[in-house]
Length: 296
Picture (cartoon, rainbow, N blue to C red):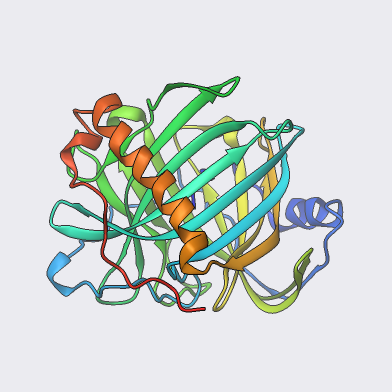
């Protein structure tokens, strides 16, 4: 969900070489050519009145109480990315979004980034990204949140995190636009029907997207691997000067008491955001517990 990962153009042969070297099994035949365009078009219109309450997109379901842990390397160092789907919602420009808490732990287990990511599903079933509040830490101390963006503020526009019906023929799509922080990420369906193995198991019919940032050519391309009914299971880097390679090592369905801890952590970030980023994050509504807690 966080993990912004961009790129220069690369053809299928180079991708095959990279995947062979990762140590994970990948097979399948359906592949699209990497997008060579510097951009990916205009964002699709979003109509809050038609939005469903929950995000049920099969490739990126956001079920409250679900927690994912991905482990791997970022720029050669061990990292753990912990993603928790909370039961909080937050209103952004008239749209009620689901609050997702992302935490990036470095090689020593110390927090390096903590983020609130805001998502909603549109009437067609696509998952829309409406903002991010990423806190940055140095040696465990908060230094700020300079890359915060909220749709409707400073020219920022909601993007698409996952298409409703992703196909190889689907055009490239904008994942979000925030000119004030030079955030302009693009994505395209790259492969379908893949067989992929990660530590939690092996999966068939895996969807692979290709992501890049026109504003950051040194960032290369990233491949994200999605399983229907589960979500993101793997991230690979291609020609990235600071490569991020991650794979799903654990998925947990939190019971209500266990979810309390993560909800409170998300609320702490939400409250800090109004102090640290009053002109951007402060333009959104306060996070509130409005979704049904998971049953155990």
